Image 1 (spheres, protein in one colour):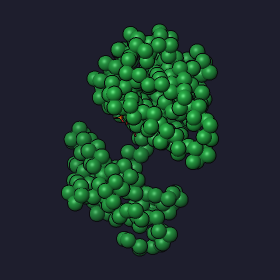
Image 2 (image 1 turned 180 degrees about the vertical axis):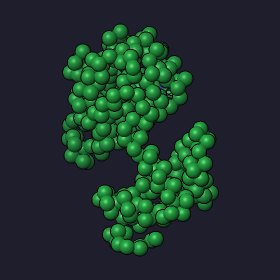
Image 3 (image 1 turned 90 degrees about the vertical axis):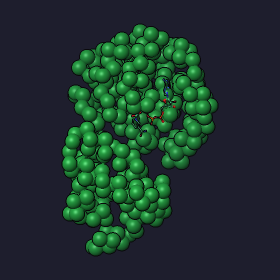
Image 4 (image 1 turned 180 degrees about the horizontal axis):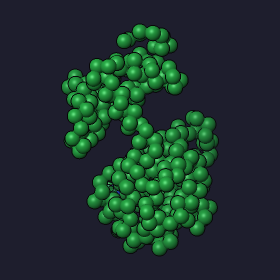
Length: 305
Ligand SMILES: NC(=O)c1ccc[n+]([C@@H]2O[C@H](COP(=O)([O-])OP(=O)(O)OC[C@H]3O[C@@H](n4cnc5c(N)ncnc54)[C@H](O)[C@@H]3O)[C@@H](O)[C@H]2O)c1
Protein backbone atom coordinates (compact mmCIF):
# COMPACT_ATOMS: atom_id res chain seq x y z
CA UNK A 1 0.00 0.00 0.00
CA UNK A 2 1.18 3.58 -0.72
CA UNK A 3 0.26 6.64 1.34
CA UNK A 4 -2.09 7.79 -1.47
CA UNK A 5 -3.94 4.48 -1.16
CA UNK A 6 -5.02 5.33 2.40
CA UNK A 7 -8.48 6.63 1.56
CA UNK A 8 -10.54 5.75 4.61
CA UNK A 9 -9.29 6.29 8.17
CA UNK A 10 -11.00 4.91 11.26
CA UNK A 11 -10.39 6.79 14.50
CA UNK A 12 -11.37 4.81 17.59
CA UNK A 13 -12.13 7.19 20.48
CA UNK A 14 -13.61 10.59 19.64
CA UNK A 15 -12.03 12.63 22.41
CA UNK A 16 -9.45 15.41 22.23
CA UNK A 17 -6.94 13.49 20.14
CA UNK A 18 -9.29 11.41 18.05
CA UNK A 19 -11.19 14.48 16.85
CA UNK A 20 -8.03 16.41 16.02
CA UNK A 21 -6.43 13.49 14.16
CA UNK A 22 -9.68 12.81 12.29
CA UNK A 23 -9.98 16.45 11.29
CA UNK A 24 -6.36 16.59 10.12
CA UNK A 25 -6.80 13.47 7.97
CA UNK A 26 -10.06 14.81 6.51
CA UNK A 27 -8.49 18.19 5.72
CA UNK A 28 -5.89 16.29 3.71
CA UNK A 29 -8.43 14.36 1.66
CA UNK A 30 -9.15 11.18 3.65
CA UNK A 31 -12.62 9.98 4.34
CA UNK A 32 -12.83 9.61 8.13
CA UNK A 33 -15.04 7.58 10.39
CA UNK A 34 -15.08 8.38 14.11
CA UNK A 35 -16.13 5.67 16.53
CA UNK A 36 -16.85 6.00 20.25
CA UNK A 37 -18.83 4.01 22.79
CA UNK A 38 -20.11 7.19 24.51
CA UNK A 39 -23.15 8.59 22.68
CA UNK A 40 -22.38 12.03 24.18
CA UNK A 41 -18.94 12.03 22.58
CA UNK A 42 -20.41 11.30 19.14
CA UNK A 43 -23.26 13.81 19.60
CA UNK A 44 -20.76 16.54 20.41
CA UNK A 45 -18.23 15.51 17.77
CA UNK A 46 -19.30 17.72 14.86
CA UNK A 47 -19.64 20.81 17.01
CA UNK A 48 -16.22 20.18 18.55
CA UNK A 49 -14.69 19.49 15.14
CA UNK A 50 -16.03 22.80 13.85
CA UNK A 51 -14.60 24.54 16.93
CA UNK A 52 -11.18 22.93 16.37
CA UNK A 53 -11.35 23.78 12.66
CA UNK A 54 -11.55 27.50 13.40
CA UNK A 55 -7.90 27.55 14.50
CA UNK A 56 -6.28 26.36 11.24
CA UNK A 57 -8.63 28.67 9.31
CA UNK A 58 -7.68 31.65 11.51
CA UNK A 59 -4.00 30.75 11.11
CA UNK A 60 -4.39 30.72 7.32
CA UNK A 61 -3.43 27.05 7.06
CA UNK A 62 -6.71 26.23 5.29
CA UNK A 63 -9.63 28.29 4.02
CA UNK A 64 -13.26 28.07 5.15
CA UNK A 65 -14.21 26.01 2.07
CA UNK A 66 -11.57 23.39 2.87
CA UNK A 67 -12.87 23.15 6.42
CA UNK A 68 -16.44 22.60 5.19
CA UNK A 69 -15.27 19.89 2.76
CA UNK A 70 -13.29 18.21 5.56
CA UNK A 71 -16.26 18.26 7.95
CA UNK A 72 -18.47 16.77 5.23
CA UNK A 73 -15.94 13.94 4.92
CA UNK A 74 -16.21 12.89 8.59
CA UNK A 75 -18.89 10.52 9.78
CA UNK A 76 -19.57 9.22 13.28
CA UNK A 77 -20.87 5.86 14.38
CA UNK A 78 -21.27 3.90 17.60
CA UNK A 79 -21.52 0.67 15.60
CA UNK A 80 -18.08 -1.02 15.53
CA UNK A 81 -18.84 -3.16 12.45
CA UNK A 82 -20.02 -0.16 10.42
CA UNK A 83 -16.99 1.82 11.61
CA UNK A 84 -14.58 -0.88 10.49
CA UNK A 85 -15.95 -1.36 6.96
CA UNK A 86 -13.46 -0.70 4.16
CA UNK A 87 -10.93 1.18 6.29
CA UNK A 88 -7.29 1.41 5.21
CA UNK A 89 -5.80 2.82 8.41
CA UNK A 90 -6.87 2.76 12.06
CA UNK A 91 -5.81 5.29 14.70
CA UNK A 92 -6.55 4.01 18.20
CA UNK A 93 -7.22 7.00 20.49
CA UNK A 94 -8.99 5.53 23.52
CA UNK A 95 -7.87 6.46 27.08
CA UNK A 96 -4.41 5.53 28.30
CA UNK A 97 -5.34 2.13 29.75
CA UNK A 98 -3.30 -0.82 28.45
CA UNK A 99 -6.09 -3.36 29.07
CA UNK A 100 -8.65 -1.24 27.23
CA UNK A 101 -6.31 -0.55 24.30
CA UNK A 102 -5.46 -4.25 23.92
CA UNK A 103 -9.14 -5.20 24.01
CA UNK A 104 -10.15 -2.57 21.43
CA UNK A 105 -7.35 -3.44 19.03
CA UNK A 106 -8.29 -7.13 19.28
CA UNK A 107 -11.97 -6.33 18.68
CA UNK A 108 -11.22 -4.26 15.58
CA UNK A 109 -8.81 -6.87 14.25
CA UNK A 110 -11.87 -9.10 13.88
CA UNK A 111 -13.84 -6.38 12.08
CA UNK A 112 -11.40 -4.47 9.85
CA UNK A 113 -10.11 -5.53 6.43
CA UNK A 114 -7.05 -7.76 6.74
CA UNK A 115 -4.77 -5.34 4.86
CA UNK A 116 -5.65 -2.31 7.05
CA UNK A 117 -2.73 -0.80 8.96
CA UNK A 118 -3.30 -0.30 12.69
CA UNK A 119 -1.72 2.48 14.78
CA UNK A 120 -1.88 3.57 18.40
CA UNK A 121 -1.63 7.15 19.62
CA UNK A 122 -0.54 6.09 23.12
CA UNK A 123 1.48 8.69 25.06
CA UNK A 124 3.27 6.50 27.56
CA UNK A 125 2.91 2.85 26.48
CA UNK A 126 4.75 0.87 23.79
CA UNK A 127 3.27 -0.70 20.63
CA UNK A 128 4.86 -4.08 21.47
CA UNK A 129 2.41 -4.29 24.39
CA UNK A 130 -0.47 -4.61 21.89
CA UNK A 131 1.19 -6.06 18.81
CA UNK A 132 -0.22 -9.57 19.33
CA UNK A 133 -3.72 -8.22 20.07
CA UNK A 134 -3.87 -6.49 16.67
CA UNK A 135 -3.55 -9.84 14.89
CA UNK A 136 -1.33 -8.05 12.35
CA UNK A 137 1.88 -7.19 14.22
CA UNK A 138 3.76 -6.45 10.97
CA UNK A 139 1.16 -3.83 10.07
CA UNK A 140 1.10 -2.10 13.46
CA UNK A 141 3.15 0.75 14.99
CA UNK A 142 2.69 3.84 17.11
CA UNK A 143 1.67 6.97 15.20
CA UNK A 144 1.79 9.58 17.92
CA UNK A 145 0.49 13.11 17.39
CA UNK A 146 0.95 16.30 19.43
CA UNK A 147 -1.72 18.90 20.18
CA UNK A 148 -2.87 21.04 18.52
CA UNK A 149 -2.37 18.62 15.64
CA UNK A 150 -2.41 21.25 12.83
CA UNK A 151 0.19 23.56 14.40
CA UNK A 152 2.27 21.26 16.65
CA UNK A 153 2.50 19.18 13.50
CA UNK A 154 5.09 16.62 14.50
CA UNK A 155 4.31 12.90 14.51
CA UNK A 156 6.39 10.14 16.08
CA UNK A 157 6.41 6.96 14.00
CA UNK A 158 7.56 4.25 16.41
CA UNK A 159 7.71 0.64 15.20
CA UNK A 160 8.03 -2.34 17.51
CA UNK A 161 10.44 -5.17 16.72
CA UNK A 162 7.84 -6.95 14.55
CA UNK A 163 6.70 -3.95 12.47
CA UNK A 164 7.61 -4.41 8.81
CA UNK A 165 9.86 -1.85 7.12
CA UNK A 166 7.04 -1.27 4.58
CA UNK A 167 4.63 -0.31 7.34
CA UNK A 168 7.10 2.14 8.87
CA UNK A 169 7.76 3.71 5.44
CA UNK A 170 4.04 3.88 4.74
CA UNK A 171 3.34 5.66 8.05
CA UNK A 172 6.18 8.14 7.50
CA UNK A 173 4.76 8.93 4.04
CA UNK A 174 1.19 9.11 5.37
CA UNK A 175 2.27 11.56 8.08
CA UNK A 176 3.83 13.81 5.41
CA UNK A 177 0.71 13.49 3.27
CA UNK A 178 -1.50 14.84 6.09
CA UNK A 179 0.73 17.85 6.76
CA UNK A 180 2.82 16.43 9.59
CA UNK A 181 6.57 16.34 10.16
CA UNK A 182 7.40 12.66 10.74
CA UNK A 183 9.99 11.64 13.32
CA UNK A 184 11.28 8.12 12.64
CA UNK A 185 12.13 6.26 15.84
CA UNK A 186 14.52 3.40 15.13
CA UNK A 187 13.35 1.38 18.10
CA UNK A 188 10.83 1.52 20.92
CA UNK A 189 11.49 4.08 23.62
CA UNK A 190 9.19 5.47 26.31
CA UNK A 191 8.15 9.06 25.62
CA UNK A 192 9.10 9.10 21.92
CA UNK A 193 11.34 12.09 21.05
CA UNK A 194 9.78 15.42 22.02
CA UNK A 195 8.03 14.06 25.12
CA UNK A 196 11.29 12.48 26.34
CA UNK A 197 13.13 15.80 25.97
CA UNK A 198 10.26 17.75 27.49
CA UNK A 199 9.94 15.42 30.49
CA UNK A 200 13.67 15.65 31.21
CA UNK A 201 13.58 19.45 31.02
CA UNK A 202 10.62 19.64 33.39
CA UNK A 203 12.28 17.30 35.88
CA UNK A 204 15.44 19.43 35.95
CA UNK A 205 13.47 22.70 36.17
CA UNK A 206 11.48 21.41 39.16
CA UNK A 207 14.65 20.06 40.80
CA UNK A 208 16.42 23.42 40.55
CA UNK A 209 13.54 25.24 42.25
CA UNK A 210 12.53 22.51 44.75
CA UNK A 211 16.16 22.36 45.94
CA UNK A 212 16.32 26.13 46.36
CA UNK A 213 18.99 26.60 43.68
CA UNK A 214 17.12 29.17 41.58
CA UNK A 215 13.72 30.89 41.42
CA UNK A 216 10.89 29.92 39.07
CA UNK A 217 11.42 33.19 37.23
CA UNK A 218 15.17 32.73 36.83
CA UNK A 219 14.79 29.21 35.44
CA UNK A 220 12.33 30.53 32.84
CA UNK A 221 14.49 33.59 32.22
CA UNK A 222 17.51 31.37 31.48
CA UNK A 223 15.55 29.27 29.00
CA UNK A 224 13.86 32.23 27.33
CA UNK A 225 16.98 34.38 27.20
CA UNK A 226 19.17 31.76 25.56
CA UNK A 227 16.66 29.86 23.44
CA UNK A 228 14.81 33.06 22.45
CA UNK A 229 11.51 31.46 23.39
CA UNK A 230 8.39 33.40 24.53
CA UNK A 231 7.84 31.05 27.49
CA UNK A 232 9.95 28.95 29.86
CA UNK A 233 9.46 25.56 31.55
CA UNK A 234 7.36 26.90 34.45
CA UNK A 235 5.14 29.00 32.21
CA UNK A 236 4.52 25.84 30.16
CA UNK A 237 3.77 23.77 33.27
CA UNK A 238 1.12 26.34 34.21
CA UNK A 239 -0.45 25.66 30.80
CA UNK A 240 -0.44 21.88 31.37
CA UNK A 241 -2.15 22.32 34.77
CA UNK A 242 -0.35 21.81 38.09
CA UNK A 243 -2.78 19.06 39.15
CA UNK A 244 -1.73 17.04 36.09
CA UNK A 245 1.93 17.90 36.70
CA UNK A 246 1.59 16.72 40.30
CA UNK A 247 -0.16 13.46 39.27
CA UNK A 248 2.58 12.59 36.78
CA UNK A 249 5.44 13.59 39.10
CA UNK A 250 3.95 11.76 42.08
CA UNK A 251 3.30 8.64 39.93
CA UNK A 252 6.93 8.47 38.77
CA UNK A 253 8.26 9.25 42.26
CA UNK A 254 6.45 6.17 43.57
CA UNK A 255 7.17 4.06 40.50
CA UNK A 256 10.93 4.74 40.61
CA UNK A 257 11.29 5.29 44.37
CA UNK A 258 13.35 8.38 43.53
CA UNK A 259 13.64 10.84 46.49
CA UNK A 260 14.37 13.83 44.23
CA UNK A 261 11.24 13.24 42.14
CA UNK A 262 9.32 12.87 45.42
CA UNK A 263 10.66 16.24 46.58
CA UNK A 264 9.61 17.73 43.23
CA UNK A 265 6.09 16.32 43.66
CA UNK A 266 5.88 17.77 47.18
CA UNK A 267 6.99 21.15 45.83
CA UNK A 268 4.20 21.11 43.20
CA UNK A 269 1.75 19.95 45.89
CA UNK A 270 2.32 23.21 47.83
CA UNK A 271 0.78 25.07 44.89
CA UNK A 272 -2.24 22.74 44.71
CA UNK A 273 -2.81 23.16 48.46
CA UNK A 274 -3.25 26.89 47.82
CA UNK A 275 -5.68 26.27 44.91
CA UNK A 276 -3.08 27.34 42.36
CA UNK A 277 -3.63 24.95 39.44
CA UNK A 278 -1.98 27.08 36.77
CA UNK A 279 -3.54 28.89 33.84
CA UNK A 280 -6.96 27.25 34.28
CA UNK A 281 -7.37 28.57 37.86
CA UNK A 282 -5.91 32.01 37.12
CA UNK A 283 -2.80 31.38 39.18
CA UNK A 284 0.00 28.85 39.38
CA UNK A 285 3.68 29.65 39.19
CA UNK A 286 2.47 32.91 37.60
CA UNK A 287 -0.67 35.06 37.84
CA UNK A 288 -3.03 35.17 34.83
CA UNK A 289 -4.19 36.60 32.45
CA UNK A 290 -0.97 38.66 32.35
CA UNK A 291 1.87 36.41 33.58
CA UNK A 292 5.09 38.21 34.45
CA UNK A 293 7.07 36.41 31.73
CA UNK A 294 5.00 38.14 29.04
CA UNK A 295 6.15 41.60 30.16
CA UNK A 296 8.99 43.02 28.03
CA UNK A 297 11.02 43.81 31.18
CA UNK A 298 10.97 40.15 32.33
CA UNK A 299 14.29 39.45 30.67
CA UNK A 300 15.95 42.37 32.46
CA UNK A 301 18.18 41.30 35.32
CA UNK A 302 16.54 40.62 38.68
CA UNK A 303 12.85 41.24 37.87
CA UNK A 304 10.72 38.89 39.99
CA UNK A 305 13.77 37.05 41.38
N1 LIG B 1 -4.52 14.72 25.12
C1 LIG B 1 -3.25 14.80 24.73
O1 LIG B 1 -2.59 15.85 24.85
C2 LIG B 1 -2.60 13.60 24.10
C3 LIG B 1 -1.47 13.80 23.28
C4 LIG B 1 -0.89 12.69 22.65
C5 LIG B 1 -1.41 11.41 22.88
N2 LIG B 1 -2.50 11.25 23.69
C6 LIG B 1 -3.02 9.89 23.86
O2 LIG B 1 -4.17 9.76 23.02
C7 LIG B 1 -5.10 8.85 23.62
C8 LIG B 1 -6.45 9.52 23.78
O3 LIG B 1 -6.28 10.65 24.59
P1 LIG B 1 -7.39 11.82 24.64
O4 LIG B 1 -6.74 12.95 25.36
O5 LIG B 1 -7.97 12.04 23.29
O6 LIG B 1 -8.49 11.13 25.58
P2 LIG B 1 -10.03 11.54 25.78
O7 LIG B 1 -10.40 11.07 27.11
O8 LIG B 1 -10.25 12.97 25.40
O9 LIG B 1 -10.80 10.66 24.64
C9 LIG B 1 -10.91 9.26 24.71
C10 LIG B 1 -12.21 8.85 24.04
O10 LIG B 1 -12.24 7.43 23.96
C11 LIG B 1 -13.58 7.01 24.17
N3 LIG B 1 -13.63 5.61 24.57
C12 LIG B 1 -13.45 5.06 25.80
N4 LIG B 1 -13.60 3.72 25.73
C13 LIG B 1 -13.86 3.43 24.43
C14 LIG B 1 -14.11 2.22 23.72
N5 LIG B 1 -14.13 1.06 24.36
N6 LIG B 1 -14.34 2.29 22.39
C15 LIG B 1 -14.34 3.47 21.74
N7 LIG B 1 -14.11 4.66 22.36
C16 LIG B 1 -13.88 4.62 23.68
C17 LIG B 1 -14.08 7.95 25.26
O11 LIG B 1 -15.50 7.97 25.31
C18 LIG B 1 -13.47 9.28 24.80
O12 LIG B 1 -14.36 9.98 23.93
C19 LIG B 1 -4.47 8.39 24.93
O13 LIG B 1 -3.77 7.20 24.72
C20 LIG B 1 -3.50 9.53 25.25
O14 LIG B 1 -2.42 9.09 26.05
C21 LIG B 1 -3.11 12.31 24.29
